[in-house]
Amino acid sequence: MFRSHLDGSAHFLSPEKAMEIQIGLGADIIMAFDECTEYPAEAQRARDSMELTLRWAARCKSYFEEHKNEVPWRSSQLSSPKDGNSKEGSDGQTQALFGIIQGGMDRDLRRESAERTIDIGFPGYAIGGLSVGEPRELTRDIVEWTLEHLPSNQPRYLMGVGTPEEIAHYAQMGVDMMDCVLPTRAARHGLLFTSEGKISIKQARYARDENALDPACECRVCQRYSRAYLRHLYASNELLAQVLNTVHNLHYYLATMRTVRNWIRAGVPK
Image (cartoon, rainbow, N blue to C red):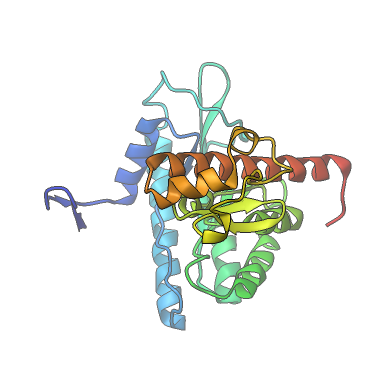
């Protein structure tokens, strides 16, 4: 139960309601309704949260199975195994429901969550409850451990990660997809990712720097605007600064993913 920040009206979100909304939106990948366990969390708190997520996962699957054909006009763009957990459109494409693995930072709980979520049965599995304030070394440890207990022949999705370096690292570990607000959030605060490292464009040292933001980048921002101009826009609180910064950061992330795909095609060892 929560209240709207617009008018204070009360709203109740349940697993069933979450499924109804996502099915109606025509989401390609629908995420089971889960609880993201905070960090740090006591052992019993982590277990209780995991059990709640598992109960909700079963309810999500049940609702999805009953209502997955209620939006026949919307076919998704994701093909997934025809195992009863996906909605097939008229063109043979599907809408897929993913389960989410929780368990805090406890290895035993993570293994149990993975095993029981797999027993419920989904066409793909997400690793949730990370990037919530824990040390990055611990994040990597929990991801590696959890991956060992997830099917290698189904999509594995790491939620809330990460930097370009982390994306490359986790892809080599066997993660298939990731999401993160970092490229756009960082852009709004003037933090830009480049082949030469991170640049905080708000710094005064860039006020007269006529070089391209990233000489190795082919995005339209780097091809057209100087660091000095980008710094001027940011210092002037121009909305265009956020737009251009976002365009560059997203281009950098997409270039990172192209590199990762090339690694995979070339068979680069993990």
